[in-house]
Length: 311
Image 1 (cartoon, rainbow, N blue to C red):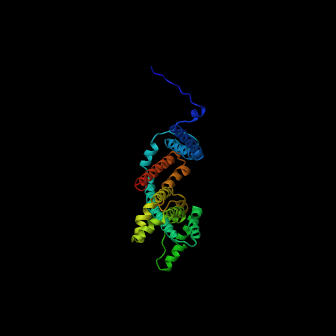
Image 2: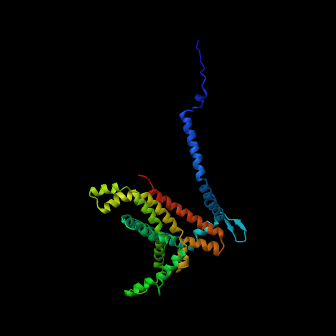
Image 3: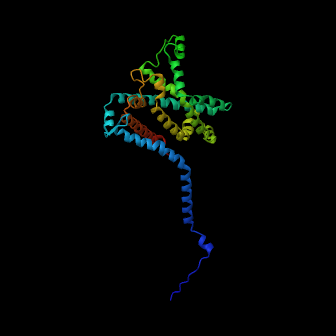
């Protein structure tokens, strides 16, 4: 005969929950608190990013006109893009500009950050001086550099004539216009990436470089095998944001060249602007924007594959 005894638990004992249940409850509260904190930015992202992108995709499938009339045409706008010579030319111009601007800006930002990292006296002053162009208007910067590049009265051509090199039409020659605009944009925007890289350099423990120096490593070896690998996550971030910035180029080209000469500085965003706000072909402009978005996303994923991975 088996006797079963029932032991009654006191209220204090019943209040004590198993450790696993307490852990799950704590994680749930933390998740709710985290969601509450990110909710404002998540709402802004949905309203100002996700909804417009979805709307642009739907608009690209229509023939939408300024008077509000529209008709569904499916993928006709994308088919039209594939056969558009102006689109192909603007794509080549944009890719060429990206290939010039991104390495120039990253190298300029990294070199300046390395120099400032070695400076002890008045580092804050020089950091502010280099960052100052970033907070100025791109239109103002473009106007200033347009005067600097001017073939007749420009500062740069005045210096070239002083050494008998003759005037050079930087903004009027197809082979020079994109490098000239890239220099303007790099001067305008490198300050932000410089600060990011400088913060990354300052976060690297000095004990690593000191240990390498004690082992006999040269300055280049310390940079290549110690500083650069530890700086890779920051470099990846800078590379991505500068690539996105380069693909969105429009203001400098609009102010300095108007897309010329002979569409040599006619970017994809310029084509989008003309299609939407000059010819009021909103469906086609949306298709250009979606293709640009896809290209930037693809390149960002490739950069993530080769630079953002963890060893």
